[in-house]
Image 1 (tube, rainbow, N blue to C red):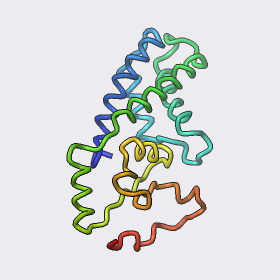
Image 2 (tube, rainbow, N blue to C red; image 1 turned 60 degrees about the horizontal axis):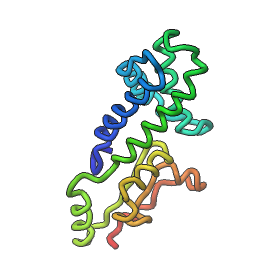
Image 3 (cartoon, helix red, strand yellow; image 1 turned 30 degrees about the vertical axis):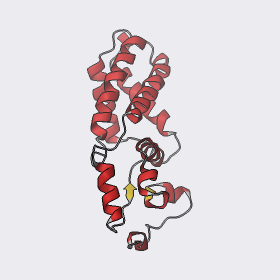
Length: 171
């Protein structure tokens, strides 16, 4: 995030498209307030920490809360959940469609590998979101599957330990 890929730029591009969709789906929506409310929710709790609610449904809930905060002028709060789900799908899909390595990043990683340095990607955040980003930018093809460690997947696989330092040893 904002190292090899400009995630913040992907977010901004996604917010533009979400704003367009929101004005189509919800007459009278304040797009700036909608995005501000979503960003606030993402900063506070970007996913269900107990993993009982799917990350997309959780984030649709953040869009929904931001819509509901605009008041009754947007209509019945329950009726705003389906548009909120569409906003989340748009946000996710547009964001991922732009998720590419910065110019020169792939060449840099290849040169590092050719010089004998071992390179890895270690992510943190929600495992499903991180896996989507890893796939969108093609990290596995560049780093190799064993060298892409998606934080959270080790817990899902029943492994609770940190990666062993040997993964960082020279190949």
